[in-house]
Image (cartoon, rainbow, N blue to C red; front, side):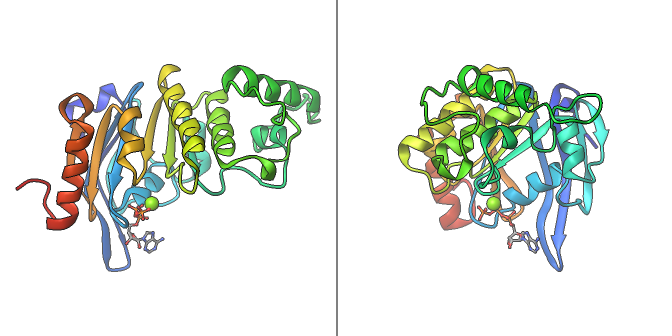
Length: 258
Ligand SMILES: Nc1ncnc2c1ncn2[C@@H]1O[C@H](COP(=O)(O)OP(=O)(O)OP(=O)(O)O)[C@@H](O)[C@H]1O
Ligand SMILES: [Mg+2]
């Protein structure tokens, strides 16, 4: 059953269950993302965070439960389908194709073509340049539409993946550990891009092990623990320190409180 809120939510996952072999990895998860809301999804290694979002974007099928998107019950059989619905995922790896230039990357799988099927190369390059300067605010002259991805910094790559999602009007951008392996300054860039998602009226799910990255940009937090939701907190109800304390306590005792 959907809760009463599912109509007002962008995404509502209800009683989601998933096992791999005999191991139950998700034990009846209820998870919501509101319109123009940034949700922080945190929890220990193996808690089930990536599995939950992979179910949402159609990488895995759930064994049980329901998914509502913009108030309608949906079944997502493929990543292609979730992209059509307006969900984009940004992973640390595989965000972009390393050997290709930026304009190829931005339009990969969604190429602009003439009605005879020819690639509109010039338009794609011009649009890419616009995305880089106007949407993403890149000022460095090293970053141009024909720059090859492998020469970009990790933060720049993540920024471009997020910029691409915004350009194609994704309603929900899912970031699974987007700052892993990045320097502090690159991480700050990625956090700015996440804040940009919010200011453009879109929603995001932000998965990270680092509460100090998640806390400033998220509106609400889900703590996942061994396949269950251990707690849900609105930012206004919990300080960064309290959230960290809860996570530490949970790791030590297996309980959120006491
Ligand atoms: N395809 C799979 N086949 C078998 N087991 C899997 C598969 N994917 C995930 N698991 C197991 O499910 C559990 C949850 O994994 P998941 O990747 O969702 O955790 P996570 O919360 O994202 O962890 P991390 O913070 O380390 O990324 C783990 O025990 C993992 O080994
Ligand atoms: Mg994970």
